[in-house]
Image (cartoon, rainbow, N blue to C red; front, side):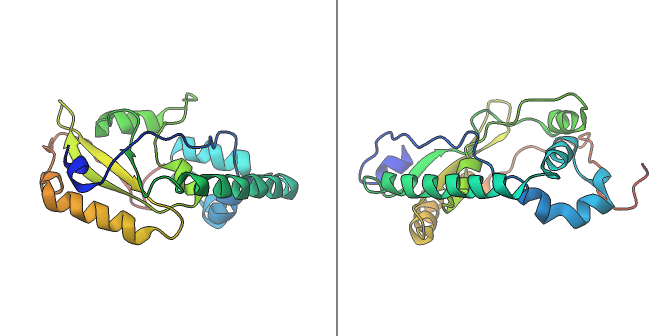
Length: 190
């Protein structure tokens, strides 16, 4: 409702799929020195992903890079007809801290979380997530605003305008004192 007041118009658009697009080994290369020294400090799903990337071939990386460049040129076409994209940050309501910790600590292979954020990393587009409400159970929800390449000023301007006409960013979720806090120190026992 508030967004409609802040914008001229809106319409639905479809973005190209990023499914299967990966830069094999890039994440591993970034984390390599830390991962090789202390893999136990990584969450189980992250550790699995890094282990899969450890033996990536240069040819796979180059093929992935070509695919990413094609996607980035393709997504530029979307912004011929719209100035900004607005969507929920997550495709599902958020989990409680307890549920998130349980999910991260499981050895069972789980499907990846479907967020609306990762594809914009692939596209190389500026994006921001701002508070926009709470679920019925009191968990915070986010609104994601995405702009074209070098569209940071427009993204930040709409985010700022939205925060000026709403109070979501001032509200805090109820905290539960019994929520377990994982030990994040480097000297934790293994």
